Image 1: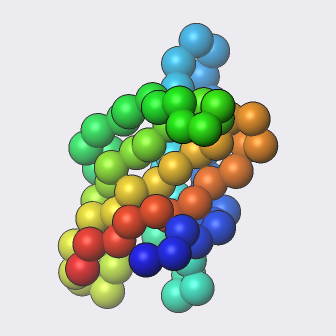
Image 2 (image 1 turned 180 degrees about the vertical axis):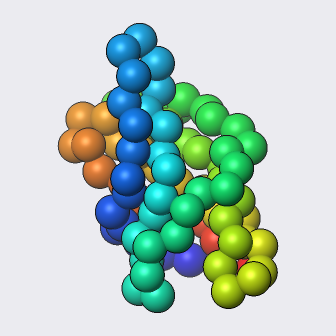
Length: 82
């Protein structure tokens, strides 16, 4: 799957990682029900934070991975498990 640029509603707290609450994809805006893991990585000189998440869309549970690139403040959906 090619990474998808996406808009994310996020809570930023002092001294901690940003916490994604909702994600916007083509079908609409969906609440993130659970963040299963958070992992900070440095790839190709870029500091990135990966979130493994679960959301319910149309009464089905989907797992996906969000990537936040710190330098550009951008979000991408990098994996989607159907």
